[in-house]
Length: 112
Image (tube, rainbow, N blue to C red; front, side, top):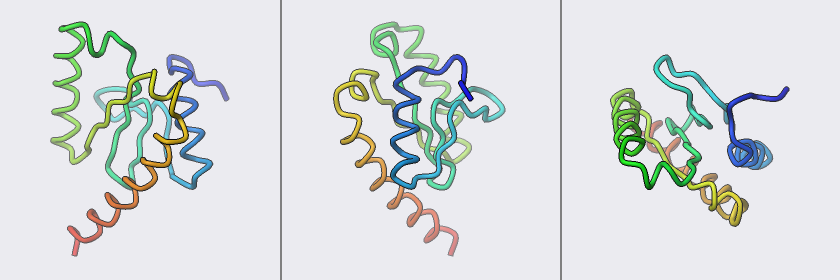
């Protein structure tokens, strides 16, 4: 199934995470916005961003608002530049596996 509107980099990261045993959804709708990659078990959203997310003030402000609403719902957002996926996919995916483990543990401890 080909997902439209999602970048090649988001697809690559999603695939790399699945290969590492991480449950991940691609282009998830959270009721307000589309999330590039959602890691629900770890309460994390991954946004794979092009250069304009770092160089265009309107986009930066829009991202701040989106991240605020995600945080308000208990989800953290990690922004990853396209270039990082293109050049360091395995390192990024491996690091995220560790982050997911820590987040899941923290969430479980907070429920007790």
